[in-house]
Image (spheres, rainbow, N blue to C red):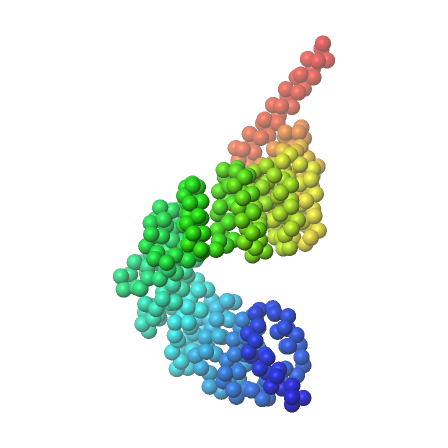
Amino acid sequence: MHELEPQLAFQFVDLGFEKGSPSFLLLWSNPHTPLIIKNRYENDDFVGSSLVNLFAKCNRLDSAHRYFDGILDNNLVSWNALLHGYSIRSCLTSVLQLQEKIQSGTSPNEFSFSSVIKSLLPLELKQIHSLVLKMGNHLNRYVSSALMTAYTKNCLTIDALSLFYDDKLPYTVVHLNIIAGLYNRNGMYHESQELFCEVEDPNIVSWNILITACSRNGDYKEAFELFQHMQMDRITPDSCTYDSLLSICTNLCNLVLGSFLHSLMIKSDFNRCDIMARNVMIDMYGKCGSLLSAVKVFDEMLERNVISWTTLVSAFGLHGHGKEAPQVFKQMEIDGIEPAKVAFIVVLSTCRHGGLVKDGMEMFETMKEKYAIEPEMEHYLLVVDLMARYGDLKEAEKLISRMPFTPNASIWRSFLEGCNKQRNIEHLSLQIQAC
């Protein structure tokens, strides 16, 4: 027992387990571990602070706070570890912890503020910003970048820009990236491109922001020229880089260019590409005419989300495989993926184009009864159009009458076009009978 104690304790502290690490869970499952640490190391500030940090990172805040309270002389490290844990879960709690920290006589540093600031909502953000100014931390690069990020997330564009254009603030590439990203989100692509020229040593984030700006602004040639310059500078592309470039291939319907990017991704270790990049690739292949390639990318994915399945359903619909699309949708349900509103729009659209009235109605009912998703105007439009197109006018009329909101012009247009089509068919039938 005595031989095991130090080994367990220092393993527990020094390995720095990531959240959810099997090794961490295995060690913590040992019934002796908590007791050993409490009895032998509770007075060791280093071990205590490390434990607070460990449990906070693993989202075990109750345990983190328990070890924090057990430290006889809490220092800045233990406080920052606790603040970081609470900032991830609750912005209000992290603010209260920060205030308690100040009242206890421990002055927060740049890491204290930057941890708390990232998760704040507008009201708390303004309060903490005032505190930052009062304590003289506003020119620190970590604090100022955290403030800019928080203002950007809260759509407080003017506040973020006023911080950035403060003449006293020492700029770093991080600050420039934050504002360039802000310009992108607000459709100010030219400003984003101009800002890039001020970056002396652009990193991967800088390149991605500029390539995204070119992609969204329709400057497709410039985006691929930047990609070449990026490789010449020995900057390794990541998933975000390929997301933007594959989207350009989709917009241009350029299968050759998209396949070329796919080959580059494989050469540079395709396993590093995240789920979003793979979803964009499925979309690219589906819209550029290669359903088999889209299915292949999907089948090779180790992890799939609702976007993966929805994109595949859309690909089947685009290629005229209407009957397969509802089957793929049902397989998604079997795999435990809960469909979102967009997924139903895609599958209903596929049913409409394929004339699958029964499948479409079944999907519409599933949406309401199984998943408690309230259909929106677009869902009703697709179902009404489906029934009206294929002669089920009575059911279409019943559905319109049961709508919880006023039908728009598009729904009535679809219904009337179905009526005209049915009238023409009946008229033609009478003419044939007369002959």
